Length: 234
Image 1 (tube, one colour):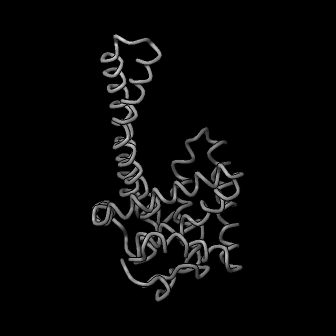
Image 2 (image 1 turned 30 degrees about the horizontal axis):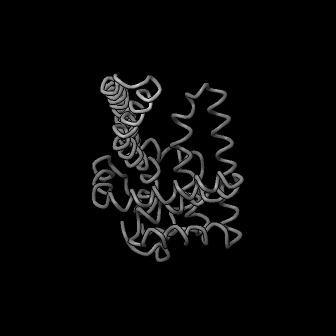
Image 3 (image 1 turned 90 degrees about the vertical axis):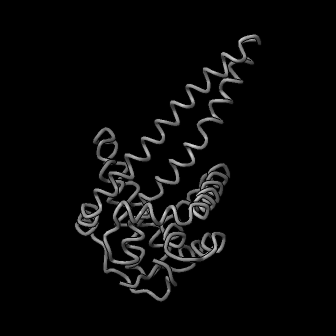
């Protein structure tokens, strides 16, 4: 699943029906990835609670505020590895559609984790860079963070499907999205998709997001190929 994106041919125009069909074909993998991510997060929350209690017990001789601060700090330290691992696993929910449209193959959960474990430090670095840039952008009047977020599908595709260095993948994703009419229309399409997903989530009390979010990731990735922003060899 590596090679130059520019040398590839897209999988065809996107549609809701196609995104739904592709989601169903990957449902076992998506479900197991989602369950694994939730389980890791839950384990991290338990470790946080346990470490906080141990910190409070160890600091029992100091004043209450200081003891609480020590417990909170230890809880956060204990939870950190689980938060990182959960984020690493969770990115597969976006990477699976990217890998599927890059190859035309059904991505199994075994294949997804095999890819993830092959270069975990690359994905951790890529995720940290993207989260940092998005966070800084949101602090700087929101719009810069939104601009970064809209490059996400292209960025994830380049990170998982090519050997492009992380910084180059990050900068080139901006060029792809914001230096052409097709790229800018792709950004607008994402905003529309986000709005639809948000409405579905609100009107179904959150339950609709369980389907709307993964289906939308397939739709958006497919749209990136259809607009010529990414190419795949199938």
